[in-house]
Length: 255
Image (cartoon, rainbow, N blue to C red; front, side, top):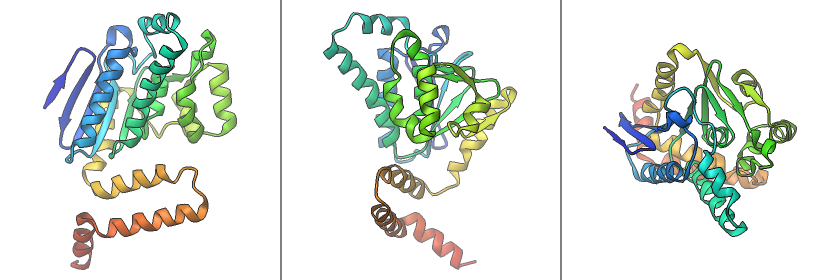
């Protein structure tokens, strides 16, 4: 079943939700309406008990080129308080992605720049088509890729993050894979099919186990070793009590 509005297409099939940024004439540039639609979609995903994964992609030639001209004009004409409110609205989207109970997978083709690169970085997994380009060019116009820094710093080394954020250059999918920013590169000519095959793995795994794993992985960030082990122990015990685990053990023992 597909739902749509002017900014975002939403398609649900076999437990996979596909969100398509739908501003191809603007290279899927982010504006308030698109950000709002994304936040609404992730809130709905949070409540969908049949959902197993979310795929985020862009219509047209690019994944996302960042903020559009109207958003930049709004920034230039706003007060500090108004800009802070606007920035927190974008930060809320990153929180919703991080707190979405199932994997959120960015499927990047073409260019993912500035806020678009940040959006991809904020997902749990990033898949890229050969030839795709990434970058955080904000410093070139006096802006700071500040919100994504919280995630980028957790994905790559401090020195890599510093270099990418302060030099503002574009980089290839190959480089992004080398430094651990993305997970896989697929041939551009069959990218959509390759993404679908990759994501289909989550149709065959335990939904509850994947959800518990995502929650544990992110909650461990910043914990001391003993605290992390205790969190792992609690998740281990909780997993044992789930229906999926009980059925899995019974099936294994019945072989």
